[in-house]
Amino acid sequence: MDIRTRKIYEALFALEDLREIFRHALPTGLGENEEEQFLNCIAHTESIINELKEGKSSHSFFIF
Image (cartoon, rainbow, N blue to C red; front, side):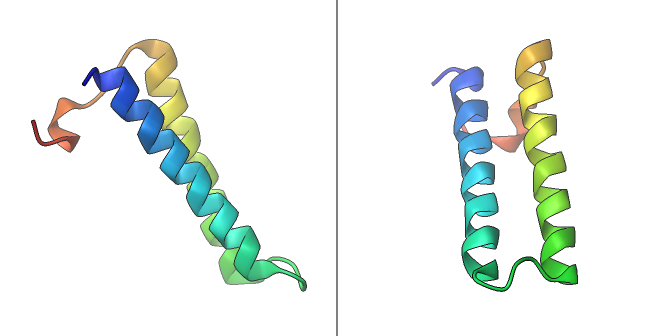
C-alpha cells in the first residue's frame, strides 16, 4: 500500500479520536483535560495533513 494511503488512514483515525473526545464531552462540553486532548489531537491531525501536502512521510512508522 502506498505511504500516502496509509497517512490518509492515519489522519482518519486521528479524526475519529476527535469525534470520540466530543462524544464523551456531551452534553456538558469539553472539560479542561478534554480541551487539552482535543488540542493535541488537532495538532497531530494537522501534522499528518502537512506531511501529505509536503510529500513527507515516515516509513519507519509502518511495518511492511
